[in-house]
Image 1 (cartoon, rainbow over the protein chains, first blue to last red):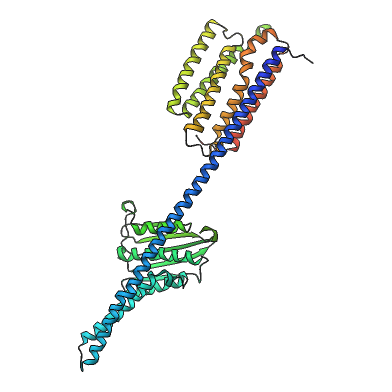
Image 2 (image 1 turned 90 degrees about the vertical axis):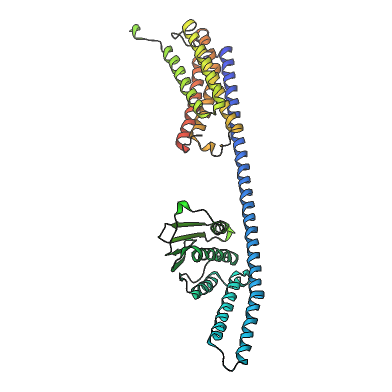
Length: 260
Length: 163
């Protein structure tokens, strides 16, 4: 066996020392990266939680406003219309013969009172909480169909596997989409298709209205609300439209109890 | 037969110069513009030292320790600058360990740093300790193998990402 000289030993020792130093530096870099990655993940998680809480509080504020509006409609405007209807009834009883216009006014007033009651209910969270999403949606559809400006057709499963608070948020999303259709689309027909497959709830709302050019559209508060609510449910909202070709809004929500 | 035996020292010299040039180009493209000034300066210093060493000093017919050692030293500095820049200055370090280049650079760092003393002393030792110098070259081969393992790990196990 060859005898290693002192020179070779020194060089070999120094090289091994340098190799160990490089290994130490590599380990240091890896540890730093690991620590930083952990910190960044924690930060992202905290930011996501904060955003979710902010979104939640915004939606709660909106719900409070809607509740207040619902109470005002029911207790104030509703009562005034009821009093008016009562006065018309008294007038009818005091007259031996009364004109047809008075009868028509009485009937119109009855419709208005009924419409306001329905509207008040659809805005009131406490009322909605008594029913599931499907029941609330059917009531909303009946209310809109009664106005006869558009016809809404619903295709749905028997029930949804969502928690009650999630069902209210989902109802608000569909309600907002329908309101947009009423206000902007000039549609005659709206199709709502709801299906739940492989832990994914999919709701498609399509109308035969005038549509819009996706490139030139700016996001309204309504659209932003739909997106925020969908994100809060851990899902997404997508719009497909072209001028003159109607609009399709697709909401996809993962059916996972841990998401909210 | 003896006339067919050609010393391969010139190939070693060419190898280290080409390797240095390619690695300089790689780090030049990787590191930020501010840091690139250092690479240009280091490249110029290496070019001057290599030219002087080859033209007036050790030449290419014997092992050129100066060129190898300077290249090794500067490449080690490139690697340290890269790590510093990635960890301190550059914010895009998420997924750095998933990058092929990261592992290749770790391999380069290990090989050139570990080989520095071998390169710098080789010319002296080949004269003084010719009979036992093989052990140093075997250690150098171990370092080269480590470099190859890091590179294979980077290329085979990690997705390619330019970071």
